Each structure stands twice: as C-alpha cells, then as structure tokens.
Image (cartoon, rainbow, N blue to C red; front, side, top):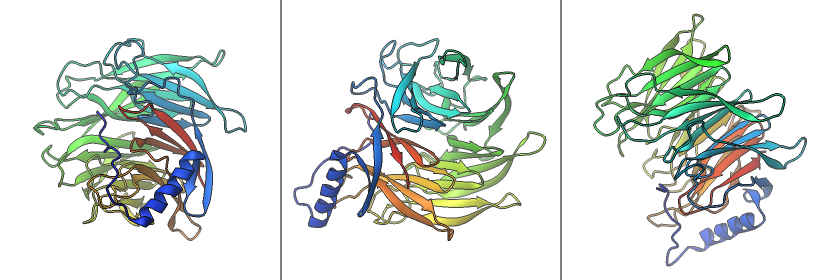
Length: 413
C-alpha cells in the first residue's frame, strides 16, 4: 500500500501557491535541486534497472563512500514481491553513477520483501527481508554482503535470523550497520501491546557478526512499543518507541557502550510527538523528527547534544522557513556532521490532503546556528520515501505502488 496521500488539485487556488508551484515545476523540468528562491544545485537520477510500477525501488537507501545502495522490496526478482537491492558506484571525480550489482538473497522466494531496509558501512552492505505479520512463521532475516577484492563481485556472507521464539514481534523491523556493529529491532505487539520489542546487538568477530547483547525496554508495552526505529554511531545508540496511537507521543532511549562492552541506558526522552519516531545520530548529536508537533501539525525537528555526564541537552528546534498546517515536517530526518535533512510536505493549500513531499536541508553555520539552505523537490507525493546523507551528498528515494521507483543524488551546499 502507498501510505502517502495522492495529488488532488483544489477547485480554487490562491495566487501565491500557484506561483510557488510553477517554480517547482521549473525545477522538475530542468532536473535541479531547488534552493528557493535564488539558487539551485545539481540533482542526478540514478539509472533504475526496472521501471515497473510497484517495485518500491527507493523504499530504502544508504550511502557509503562511492557506493549508493537502493532497495526495491516489491521487485519480482525470483517471485512476486521477492525484492532486490541495487548497488551503484560513482565514477572517479565525476557525478555519474553506474549500476555495479543487483543483490538477491541465497534463499530468495516470493513475498520475501528483500530490501525493506538497507545500510552500508566500511564497504559492507546489510539488507533486511521483513514481512510485518506478528507472531507468524516468516523468513525475516538480515543479510550481510561483502565485495570480492579480486573481481569486484558482491557475495552474501551471512544470514542472521531471529535468535528467539519471536514473541516480541517480527524480526528486522528496523536496522542499523555502523562499522563492526549491527543492531536489529523487533516490532513488538503493535495491536494488543502485550509484548514489547527488543534490540539485538551484533559485533563482527572473525568476519562474522555474533550476537553480544539483547536490550529490552524498562517500560511496559502500554507506554510505547520498543524498537520502532534505531540508529548508532560509535559507542552511542538510540532506540525509538511508538505508542502507535494518533494522539499519544513516543519515546526515545539512549545508550552508551562502556569500557567493558556493556550497553548502559543513559536517558529516556518522553513526549516525542511522532507516530514512527524518526531518529538520527551523528557523533554526539541526536536529531528527532516530530511530524505531529505544534497545534497546527506543521512539525519540528529537535537537535540534542550529549554532555560529558551522559545527559542530553536540547540545543536547537528546527522548523522550515515556511511552515504549513499539517505539513508533517520531520516525517524523516537524517543528520551527518554539520548537515541535516528533514522530510515534510510543501504546503496544504487549504485542502484535506497535501500536495507533495520535499526535503528541507539545514547546515550548521559558523555562529553555531542551524539554517535552512536548500529545498529538494521533484513534485511528487512519493518523493523522499527514504533518505541518507554523506558529507555534501544526499541520496533520496521515491517509492510507491502507483509509480515507477526512482532514486536521486543531490549535491548539498
């Protein structure tokens, strides 16, 4: 299903939004990243190997060095919706990207949804196959791929299954790969909230990822279901928990790995006004997207920084330069160094449904303030289904059941 609203035009439209729409149309036609109203930067479209609708190419994305990884969990690679992952490589000192490999699991079969989540780090790629059916027998797993140093081919080197009875929900609900660390969550019982989710921690030992820890929420599932989202950077880990309720806020848990290798719970952050609890870690900065925040539902992104005592201090609250009622700013968020990207709708035009989704880019200025520097927009509700950042580059997916999936690389200012 496509969870995003369709593009419906109103019977009468105010003049200013029409002019804004014309500017966006110009950006789409010329294939540029818009930095409204005065500048633009290059936007490149990756060569999708399959232009069939419903492959959900772009549902997951990851950047690592010169690699761009794009999941297509709906692709009919070896059966209906078996899924696949495409690996692209950037040419030396060029902006061109070529398809280097198409990854499929060794046990590929229909309804596998391989590519639901992807991540890449240190030349390795982690991919999930995830079917969201609670407490049923599924093939959910995480697959690790590495590249042969001689011929450049990619090979599956490991398949990781859920290590227990699965009563805490389907495996691989969310996943992050950070160097030699792999963290995978389960979804918990999102209906009856009887069982909470868990986080499985794996560390690479002798070329294989071995489970070294299992984290559980100290709170009951009724407060929030643990494992909705996850991110890691070095010895820091953040886990999101959702109430899966329209009006109830979520929770973020932060952990630090101590000298003995134990993950210690540092802080429980309540009141996160978001359904999916988007989070992103970069160094000692944590970004939290809150797409339902504020009375008008325009949304916000909060940035917190970790103090030496392990506590987290709120340093900035970001909003778009032009907030829109029910604009859902903060639906997705990604922070890397001094850049942050947040997804939201572009406007509402006094309608019940939004027009399309865009990516707002913020940069940390020398005076310590985060300032909006760009808006990336291709004029489609399926745009920004996923996003990743790396230095001055963003990889943005466009996936939906009624469109041919696409992925774009944007140069950031």
